[in-house]
Amino acid sequence: PMEVMGLMLGEFVDAYTVTVVDVFAMPQSGTGVSVEAVDPVFQAKMLDMLRQTGRPEMVVGWYHSHPGFGCWLSGVDMNTQQSFEALSERAVAVVVDPIQSVKGKVVIDAFRLISPNLILANQEPRQTTSNVGHLAKPSIQAMIHGLNRNYYSLPISYRKNELEQQMLMNLHKTNWQHGLTLKDFHSHCEMNKGTLDSMLSLVKGYFKSTEEEDKMTKEQLAIKNVGKIDPKRHLEETVNSHMTENIGQVLGSMLHSVVF
Image 1 (cartoon, rainbow, N blue to C red):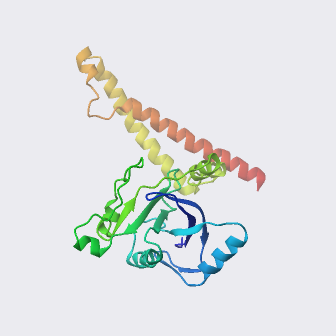
Image 2: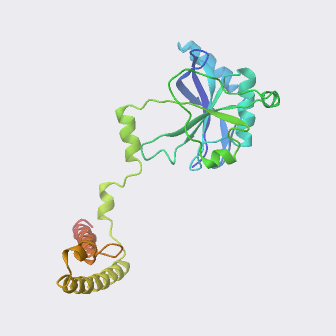
């Protein structure tokens, strides 16, 4: 997947709160690990067209994606954010990881740069706020890439409606046809052979354990399987798994022979 970027529209509600109501993509040149805008006048043209359609929102920052490698700012990202903060010191950089977001929880974070002048003056760069919320625990990857040294994270909240939640939850699931996909017959036979060998050893272990149980007291029976493999339980699980795999393979073979 390629990185993408765009601008965020919204408003600065008060001294501490930024609301984002919409976004739009920009002409960009992206790879799997970086992205840059390629049309410097596009933003002005787009804002002018939005005003003509009754959209009075202003640009409050920019967003881009980090597909698969978490939320943090690279050197290129910090340079881009610096140009936005030159126009508005409260501009925000939002990073989203779409690969890690397919399990229902959106992986997203917002950042602002730390001014070197504030560091030299020994001043705290973050805004203090009485808003409800707290900073999320930073990832080690973000700390390595300059979090709390070159930029800091902001508390962020977002809304998802029911349909969006269902979409995110379904992205990483296999569909029903996946259960009817035929496996390679040779590898399936080898897997069955290995499973049967495993079941044979579990049966022998279960037979041996039942013989030992007849000679044990109640106290010894209570701790008999502590720290050991329970052959009965493993035998049940292996049989269930073996039956499920073979039923699916047989059913798929029948459907393939009838349909194709």
